[in-house]
Length: 553
Image: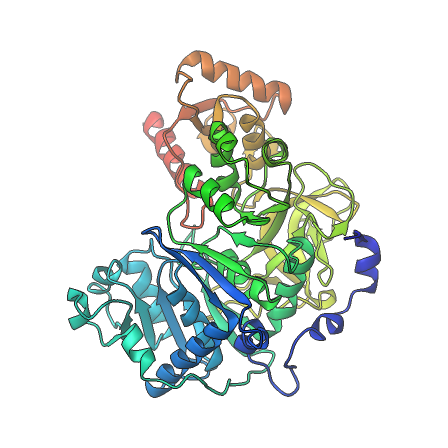
């Protein structure tokens, strides 16, 4: 396939050209289940989902079967008085039942609400209560958590009647579906009507609500087609869990919007499991967080056991992708991995594109996705020039793909006037339309007059042969105000001694700068992460602050 020039494509881009790929329209109404399932169901053999359960059994569901099952689930929801605008929560692992819940909720015009299975009862209670959810679908493994949830809505359990929890649940999944008809007229929505109820990952404070309207579909399509580079012949696997935004947006809605087969692996992530899944299902197009690529790189010796793996392209999102990881993926799989950037609020807004041709810069989050105008703003909200640092923002007035309406319950106002959506992420403006991520605004380390981005220090540490992962934070210091402290996970063959500390410090001094090197290094077994795989630097900052306070006493 001939590459398309990014500049030429961006110049001629229009939302109308994407909308021509849809069945519905925003004037007469649109149904998301129709757009991502029904319209591909005429071919009874066309596969929508391939899956592998945790017990090792595997299977597939065609778009036609998914259409029938979603109709049954929609019928059940209607029988319980659940319809347009109502929140339907799902606390399930990556199984066919989860996919049926997503599609059925969307068919009836309800708003699908994902819940990640690692949540405790408090996180579940907060999200259900805040959203006023009318139903929660779960399984026996998750059921005990619900005992401590106040205000629990109606329950639907994916279990056999013989399961002890079956007696406590209000309804059982498969018996409830079998009572319903295999056809259900889709409920039409408008452009501003929500179809997903998300919550931010909540690394600081309470999670904020994010409703995703149907007008987000063109943005999802744009990202999948040109950044991910998804083609009809691809076997696509997004490792991200649909309990979070990247997994739900781009492992479920996105690939199915293009009529492509998506893959679910219920088992937890391990190097062996991932490599075997890539081999068995002949994955050609892979998306994952940097954590996944780093862990595969740490188990490089296993790759030779899977010569059948034949990746065409790979993508990364969630955190900056280190240049050494990019080089390793190229060596290990003869495959280009591209870094992408986005948020729960906006979806993906910047990327190094697989299907658009442009210059690539190491450690860059890429170029604005056509349909968005991204800028970097200084402290006075002026757009900064080439080589300057500022807060990444979306120019809402010149971004026809932009869809974020503000937090669902107005928990925060992340806007400057009616012009800019403020991401809270600090970037360097490269001057050629691309940006390089430096860190979150609250992650930036101010030390002895320097502003130090943790991402570049972490990336430099990762270049050292001893390091698997690292997280860098600021630690209060009497002399410098703040010093750089690194928490480092090493390969098992390296000793955690002062010699290694000094080698890593010198490595950063040499490779990055004399003011950015970590004056303290602490070796740890693992780094604290959110359930979606992002490093929770706020926890490490708090730990470092407590250490400094103890010394000061």
